[in-house]
Length: 63
Image (cartoon, rainbow, N blue to C red; front, top):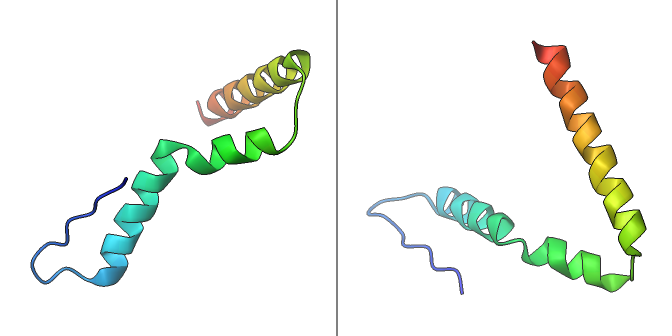
């Protein structure tokens, strides 16, 4: 369970934004979406490699 403590006089929008960040870090939605359909290990591995290559390409373009 995610708990967000409101600070004195804090805007509700800022607290909601902090909640969303914490929720995203937990990875609940990502896990739920991955369980919706079975994916073979080879396909998962291929996607991970493609993602790593893409990120590496982005890093080399910046430098």
